[in-house]
Image (cartoon, rainbow, N blue to C red; front, side, top):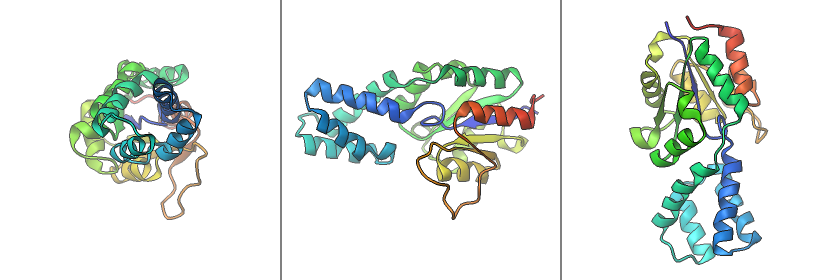
Length: 223
């Protein structure tokens, strides 16, 4: 049996908020829009919660930009991967998981070009066995089917058991992973408390490296 660990991408393996802030600063500077525009865009983004078509429609209207919504969104998808980094300790932790016999994958919502660019530019592409991106598969977390696809891309299945999901979103990652039969690790970024209506995750940590430590302590080598 080859056990599996699936990771969310944004704000789990990479700091999506930091990357967005750097992208927004570049966007504002290129158009000479001023600090007020930058601060407004960060608030509007709501840490990625606002759909991108809504976000760019409001940006275009508020800042009186000439580009279309589609052009703005396309520029974002081309530019964001350049801003994304995966911390070296996390990359080493993923390597350690695979050396111990685990299959390691990424399961993420988002547009294929944007998310795939992040995976490749951050060095994650060489540290995982596979990934499933909602924009490519036509299904989004928390739907169990996206977790199943990710497992298959890693050369295993959820039915093999012993799998884990690590992510920062209580519903999309933790609830979705639990419904797919995975054990759960929640990345608590300090952005809010755990929702009282949801069953607690199996473990709570502050970053992906610590999540790997927990999984290795409980599971050791995957055989």
